Image 1 (cartoon, helix red, strand yellow):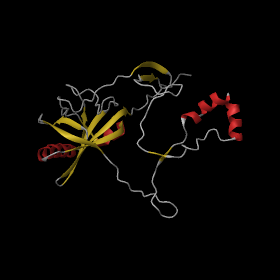
Image 2 (tube, rainbow, N blue to C red):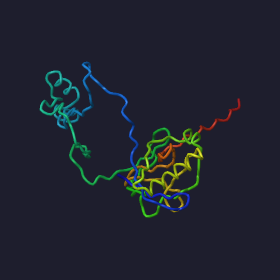
Image 3 (spheres, helix red, strand yellow):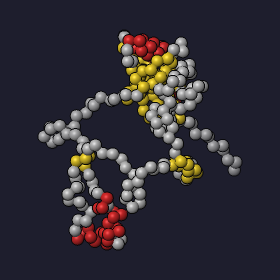
Image 4 (cartoon, helix red, strand yellow):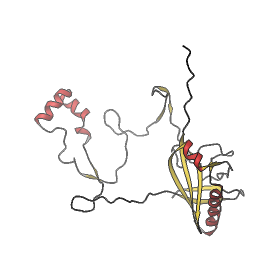
Length: 239
């Protein structure tokens, strides 16, 4: 379970747990006989039976089409349709061979989709559970404004690990709830750097939201990497 090192308005910090927010399952899928149904992953094909391999084997797409009419070269009767579990992602080259130590690139595109720049992807370490805690920035934004300005990609829930951190997080949630606001959360000495939850993961802006009910609380860290902006109005052209 990941951790986060965060400080409160009194500049006191604590390391607490952070977990994904799971949405409860409200739909039960059944078949025509009211039996429980579930999703499974099946093997569609193998590398030696995909389109590129068949083209190399038969010489062209027309020849592959005729071979499919005459038989079933695209089907591996021993492997196709088997249930897959515990799979891992691998990278292959154009010859369908496994490759190692892959160098990934970031591609920057303009609004029309044209490539502007290409650079090696930097694997940045996480910055939410370092020795330097995430500071209480005091930059509050009304919840009604935040949900209209930013697109949220995910959210994490901060949870206590003992009685002291319960009081610590409850007070933070209560403060945010009373303000009816979210607080902008950033990393670095000046809290102006994006949050990176895991090594090599996407950078996000963080917005902290708190709710309470009696002696219960929920403290949510909303993550966003996209801001919605109103398009500029084009000036009226002179006739």
